[in-house]
Image (cartoon, rainbow, N blue to C red; front, side):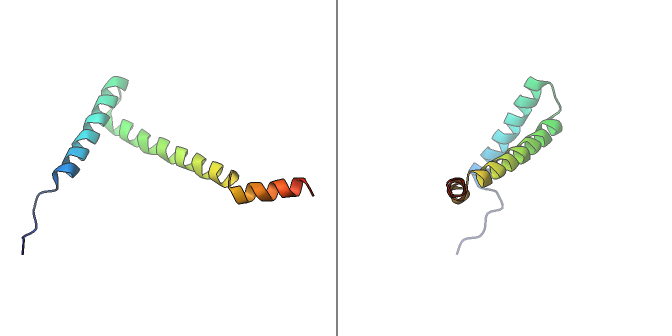
Length: 73
């Protein structure tokens, strides 16, 4: 029986470190505070997700098929 490790796996730590580094580098290049860059990323993600959902609903094959059938009736 093995005892659980108190340290996170190296990959998880490396990913978090790379994410922090990328945020820091982007903040430095844009001359903005890091928290603002982080929150802006969440804001942009939420808007992109909303657009993708609305486009996905509009371009649903079943809806398109129904609309096409209604045009030719």
